[in-house]
Image (cartoon, rainbow, N blue to C red; front, side):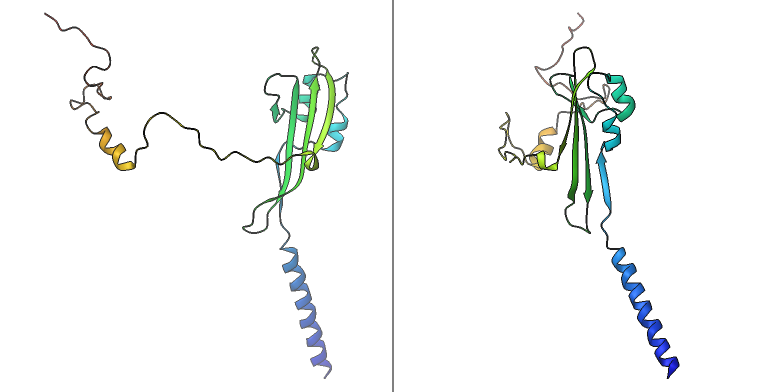
Length: 170
């Protein structure tokens, strides 16, 4: 009787341990994308004292720069988690913005988070282009006869009235 109770306890503990291990394996891995500076690194950047070179030494190269001037650098990073085949979820997003003065010293810094972002609606319009819409068959047939038959030049034949002409010797 004692042996039977002891076996039941061992089996119960094994089930509990197995369930705990299985549940621990269900944790979604978190992945960091981009350059996400830590808070202690951000604190090292001092406005009015540090230069562009100092910022690069502490944080590395920026993720991007302002498109029309080189006065603002952005360090952009996101932490995402994904469970199985579902769409990844952004857990943390941080943008560290560093603005510079004309003398290359830091003018201002600002940390932007996921809550500072704004949702945008991309436009689904199609830009019209010149030309015709050809299917695959029309594209293949349209290329017949455009290649040099002699194989001497190795490229496409310009055809009549196209490309450079050389005078014939007399």
